[in-house]
Length: 466
Image (cartoon, rainbow, N blue to C red; front, side, top):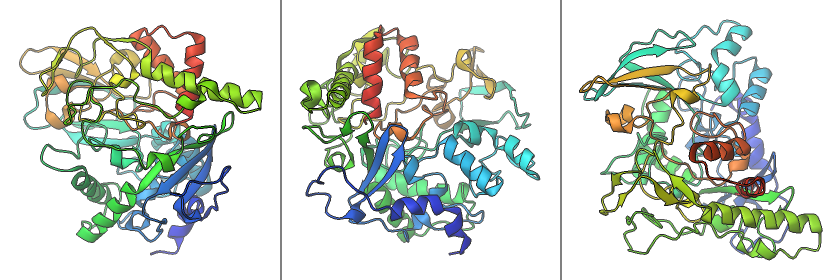
């Protein structure tokens, strides 16, 4: 391994060398200090627990296996919830004058092969990576697609052919993977005939060949080692600046408790796709129920804990009229259940996996994130035309449609696991929400939920505690 690899990845390795001082006596399952790593985030402390016994910095996840200096940890930083954040990327840019391995023109720049001959040109070339933490994903339109690209309004003038689309997306966290039902935002690494473990192995190889520009594929042993490392990771907020330890006073926050949560494809599914036949329970989160009557002697702590408990109740039970959601409304699922339009639901209708918050089946949805009305000046706008009818739609990212070629899949994405949210702003696949306040406001505007100011504040407090 090149010696300068350690310099380039010093921040990530420092997180692994951190001796964690727990604010309360750890449970028996947290056996040794090397089981846990911790880092500061804007609202408290994030922790990662590994079921592998200890963190192995010699795992291929941390090795330079390509030709451009990148490793998995270039875009999956433990201290940023195993993804990247603009603030940290900007720090790397300043420290290296834009020469850190994350700044590569194969997918880190706004345009492929951008001019990066000076610091100023590098800053311009990597503006989306620096401002939103976005990586460019270029995909050719499927040969059997039901649509073509009529035109593109490209603020970067990349001169890409109309047979391909450049999309700009946040790297998904490489932790809490045991709760996944699909791999990647639009599920491009998953199929109907493979398991999640197989999908993750393929994703590791594709990332090495693509992002790291490797000259040869990973060996089976390297793929297995990366998958074993990743699937052993559980990350969650552990300490709140306002509420203290998130496993105090009967609460069950933090990554160790999370590692014991059961999961299988279809668990708690709301449209009858749970293979056990157990009915959907909208109270998908029960981490902080004990805090409804928090008893800490410090008034500020009691108030903060009760706010988190109220926010959990809002997330579980606040009625939401779901309408215009492609992939949900007017959809008949394999279980035979048809979801009408409108549909009375809650946050947990789509975030149904217990105490994780993603969807427990492959169910990409279009909630309007890529609509032309929400386009910002730094995003391209694609005009797609349906071949059979001539109708058009404008979108900043076709989403799942770039994999299936189906018109009905335009703008569909999966919902990510919600644990560890506090450490990894901005949010959504395109980083359009700068804060959790912006996330809540998006849903309020989109679905007219009718949240009161108190409910918004409580909901945000809950999300920060995940």
